[in-house]
Length: 185
Image 1: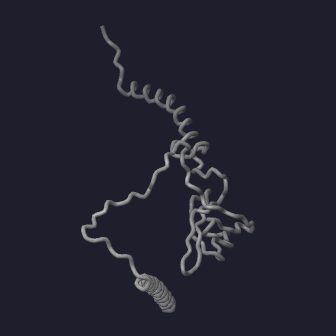
Image 2 (image 1 turned 30 degrees about the vertical axis):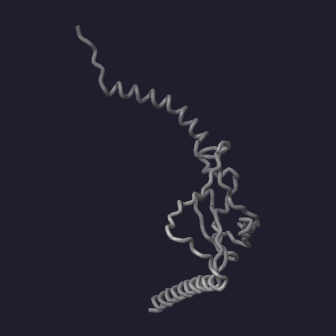
């Protein structure tokens, strides 16, 4: 009596077709609900939630002025733009660092963008991010600084900050001069 031979390829194809049929519904569920996004946010949309085409992703205030990071949700690209400057149809009108808010003009339409807040699940537990280090001082505790010593330390820190700023400006001026010299040749 001869037994019919079942080829391994036939078994594999049968299992593969069953896996695809069962996996389609699981993928549909995963595409709609993601454990990595805030509740109520559909997966596949990049988590923008608000539906806005542009979002304020960050801001920086330096000695040279203020810059904001504008995130293009559709293009999945961000760019830093200085206040009063424009880049690709986006002009930054003003930036309020205290309120984390920027007024921008996008394609001629003025709008206010607020910094995105961190999304956390409803059942998130608050924790203290500051953990004091154990004290390892073996000698006497240091004495508090006098007003004069504190003033001198502050002036020294300000001097270092000014010197760093001057150094950065000189480096930029040198790079600009080298670039102009290279273009002139």
